[in-house]
Amino acid sequence: MSARPVLPGATLGILGGGQLGRMLGMAARSLGYGVVVWAGNYDAPARVIADRVLTQPHGDLEGTIELMRTCDLVTLEWENMPAETVDVLSEHRPCHPSASVLRITQDRLAERALLDRLGIPTAPAYGVRTAEDLHTAWQKVGLPARVKTARGGYDGGGQWRVRTETELGSLPTMDGTTAYRWEKEVNFEREISVLLARSSTGEVRVYPAFENEHTGGILHLTRCPARISPEVARRAEEIARSVAEALQIVGMLTVECFVVAAPGGGHDVWVNELAPRVHNSGHLTIEASSTSQFEQHIRAVCGLPLGETTLRSPAAMVNLLGDKSRARVQLTGVPEALSVPHTHLHLYGKQEVRARRKLGHVTALAGSPEEAVARAIRAHGALGFEG
Ligand code: ATP
Ligand code: MG
Image (cartoon, rainbow, N blue to C red; front, side, top):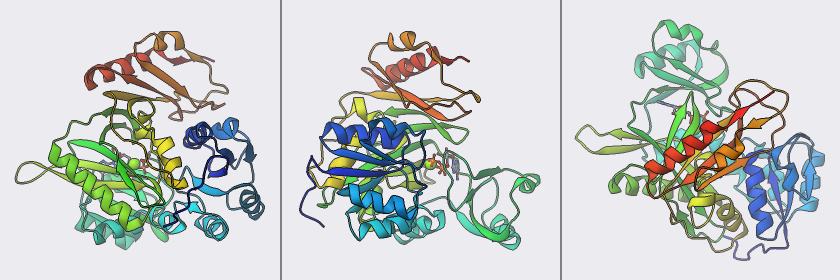
């Protein structure tokens, strides 16, 4: 563990230029750091908060050298960055999270192997590459199932829901070239996420669990506090801590979990997946928590003391997604949305609207989570697109 903190005045490099990079960059700037964003293209939400933007494709050698030259420390907003680039960067600069964390969390099969090794419950699953594997998975794990690409999936992409034998026909051809995971569909009671920060000094702070609702595999609504028992909360936190220690991660870690009814009564916590970074379900920490997940990540990677993770207020967040393809975002209803009390709108500055693309989010605070949900939904409902 490095003991020497990277102090404000230093420049932080962020791999990735999406909304997570943008909000991380804003937190870094507030703390007085310089920011270089390796966006990989010219139209990235994080470009406006950076002192310098790199547009080379990720993995490019010239970009790697440029980042090394301009930054004191490197972090990332998305785990699907070339691990080889992080290998090279980390020979010259501190890089958090590490390439070894990326190699595990980029691959659903490697991630599952880690969780199995730690004895953490997950949905029954089977790794699949060939038609023969597929048959075995079907026999062993059964239907209904979710078949997920081992690498590169996000926001429900690279996933197939198979409920019946006939729907097996909708799966991609299993020709041995691509790895998938056949996963039993879980009849969960709730979905929660546990966000945790682990700093380069080894200090750990855990946020209270957030409760998430997905629509079509994409996050729609987060509320806090989650409607879970103290036992479930304790178990979820214990799982997150053990994963963080096993990975020796530095920065934020998100553990997405299913809360399922236990056979003998009560509930079990199963892990769905890990994200070695800030997370969409943590956006409400900007207003609802003592320390936002973005500031916390910056503190963690820089080796500064971590902030309090206590909730200041019940809160709810609703994602603003694109409805269909449009050349420009022309948002309507902003005054109406902002007239809902204790409501905040975050827009990511994306130029182009596409169906289901994340364009922003609304967070509302209130005296109770129910009222916060009602406010966030009301504000979100006032928003629309034109053009
Ligand atoms: P993201 O990276 O955006 O979190 P992803 O594409 O990696 O998403 P998952 O988190 O695996 O996908 O799945 C997205 C959502 O689909 C889950 O949050 C859950 O609602 C549902 N889902 C995934 N796997 C299962 C399962 N085995 N049983 C029931 N629901 C599932
Ligand atoms: Mg997920």
